[in-house]
Structure formats: structure tokens, C-alpha cells
Image 1 (cartoon, rainbow, N blue to C red):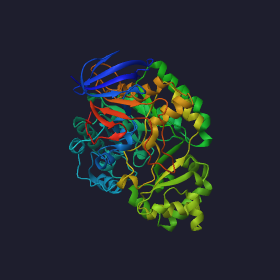
Image 2 (cartoon, rainbow, N blue to C red):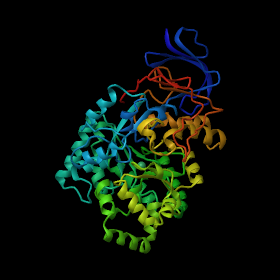
Image 3 (cartoon, rainbow, N blue to C red):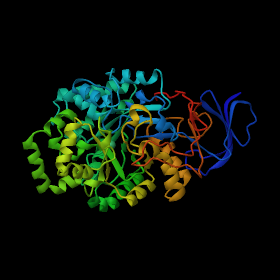
Image 4 (tube, helix red, strand yellow):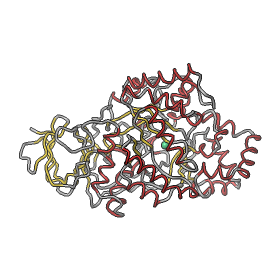
Length: 527
Ligand SMILES: [Zn+2]
């Protein structure tokens, strides 16, 4: 007796092989059989005549660390067909925490009404396991969190003893179930770290079989050098590398695409263990405080807010805006202030969806002063969406054989605290957008290629065995979607919208999305 029988579906197995018709039987959490006609009885039969049967999507780049504890049903992800989330990216994990990182992470988690009661990676993962989550989770250790724990958030270099303390935190967290280290060298305090500091930390991953992922130091003026640094770290530490959300930011940098592609082709030819992921949008989403030069962003969110009250600092920033405009452009990546939109602002829903230019005009202020004042009144915690990228570059990178799909998003839901912020549409739309807009409509990828970039490629990179593939004995993480209708509906102005055309999602052999409804099942495992 089977648990689930999926009849008459079109199998897209995740390897990139052409689609074919077959029935799929699920028993004991795994795919028990795949055959042209399965006659066995099943507790539940799903008629998949109109549907593609694909491995559940694996999201290599998420920030769901906190949200999964607030939204265990992982609505915005599971409804995209995502069955595994890789959390702790961009150097920002919520565990392990010590020292100054406790208050910094607690302040960020307070935005979603989440109490930080854990310290170690093991304690955090236990909170995910009990009472469970809808999706499987792979945890990365964030370098900024480790650095904040040992050195605080200042521009300092570690002593040998402090370096050893950071390495020990990585070692312990890996032993407790993490699967790699992420850096956000673009963000302070990661930005202050020399390459060798990261090499030292990444070297600890080797004995655990871990991966190094990076939001590289710059995605604009020095994007090529920054990606080369990620390669170097992987080479010196002898660990695989994942370059996160590959992109070129800033219109004056778009001409660097050919050189970036040459670097990627070289990785392909030499067969080094290096991969890239990408979100299918031309806007980034991150902290408003990243608008500031690094010297003005020392010390975490609260310290930044305090600093913005200092008239001397503000005068210095105004002078720098006049004298070092190119540096600001490189950091901002936008053409003007109308291309930065407020997406989250504690206590001020009226500001959501407004651009810096709008707010400056309404308040009769200079846009720079507007940014400083917004940082003060949000205690440094405002978030924004930044229109920094070019559609043609997004499509060209998507086609590259080393690029997979990742959301850079969180597991949100429209109701409650997670729906309060404006958010980036990628939280709800990434995977269906690639299937609908980029595969079906624009033909940037075939459907089989698109699914491969969402499943087996990511499983392989992160060492997830028996996942990301429709094959007998693989785990039954399965997404059923309608290739003719699958699409994202979330937009920048109306982001909390579930996609269409993904009526069934199965995680470890349990149905989580059943005929478009969430069953409440929490079958996800910490992998
Ligand atoms: Zn990032």
C-alpha cells in the first residue's frame, strides 16, 4: 500500500532530461516507484493529468532564520514549491550568538516579535525541530554574527586569540548541525575583515565537509575583484564556494558583464567547485543603512542611528556627497533617490512603498538629510528596495550553466507580524516567476533547465543526497505545478501575494499544500 499515488503526471526529474509521462508512488517518506502505470492501492491519489511533477525546489539563499520560528508553515516559500530552505546567508545567521551579537540579533528579531532565547547553533536548530517546520532546513553560520560575537561591530582586526575564538565558534556550530559558513563582506562588520580572516574560518569547514557562501565585498565598482576574492578564499581553504545572488549593480558598471562571464566560463572549464545563485528581479532589498559610507556605519543599527544625530557627522557626509560622489554612486547603485523605496519601517506604515525622493519632497528636506533622519527615527532598522540592476544582465546570467535560482527572501505570510512590512516580491514569487515569466514567456530557459537550476544543481552543491531529483528511493520532496499557468503575482507595490499554478507540494512524503490549501503539516527536517 502506497501513501500517495500521483497519476498521469509529466515528470520533470530535475536532472535536465526531457520531460516524460509516468505515475509516481510515495511510501514511508520516499519515492517508492516510478512507472508508466502503477496499479497499487494508495491512501491518497492525486490526479496530475494537467501537472508537471518536479522535485521540490531547493532555495539556496534565504534569510528565513527568524521568520521560520514565527511562521512554521513557511507559507510564502512552500506555496512557491520550495521544500528546502538554506538559511543564514549573507553573513547574517541568528546563531551562534555571544557578546554584542546577542543584542544586535535580538534587536533585529524584535522587529518580528521574536524573543531570542537560544545561543548556540544546536539550541537554535532544536527550536526549529520542535514543534517543527513545513520545509526542510539547511543552516549556515554567518560570519558577521561570529565576528559580532567575538569582536563586536567595530572596525577592528582580530588578535590571534580572537581569530581562534571565532574559528572555535564555527567548529562547534558545524558539529551541532550547520553545513557551511556564509559571509556578507559588503556589510559591516564583515567588511572590516581581511581575506585571511575568512580563509581561517573557512578552513574549519573542511573537516566537516562544509561549503563557503558569500555575498561578496562589492557587487558594483569592484564586483569582479570581489568575486575573485571569493574564489581565492575557497581555493586557500580548500572548500566549495557559492557566490550568492550574482549580479552587477550600478548602471556605470554594466559593461563589466563580459569579464564576469569570462570568469564564470573559466570556472566551468577548469571544473572548480564554485557555483552561483541568482534572484530573478532587477531590484535588491536590504538595510537602508547600507546607503552610508563604511566609516559612518560602524557599530550596528543603534550606533548608526545615534551617529546620524551628530551635526559634524552630517556635515562631513554632505561634504563627502559633493566631493566623492562616485563612491556614493557605487555604494547606492541607483540613478537617483526615486529608485530607493522604503520596505520596512517599525511603527510607520505610512512610509512603506514611498521613495526617498517622495519623502524628501513631502517633508521639504534634502534627500541626504531624509536618509539620516529615517535612520534616526527607525533606530537604524529601516529596510529598502533598491532598483540597481539591468534586465538583460539578469537574463544573461540566468542562462549561464553555473547559475541556480535562489530567492534571497524569507518565509513570510500576509497575516500577522510578517505581513506588516512591504517586503520584496521575491519572498513570494522567485520560483514561479522563473517558470512562468522566464521559461514559458521569455524562453530564457527551457522548463527542464529551469527545474534543474531549482533542484538537482543546488542539492549537489550543498551535499544534499537523495534530494532535488525524482528518482526511486529519493526523498519524496515533490512539487506539482501547471506549466501553462504557473506564475508569480507578487509585485513591489503589492508583495504579499501567493503565486498561482502550484496546487500540490509534498515534503518528506507528507502533503503540505493540498489543492492550493496549506494542510498545517510540519514535516520538514533539519538536514
Ligand atoms: Zn546578500
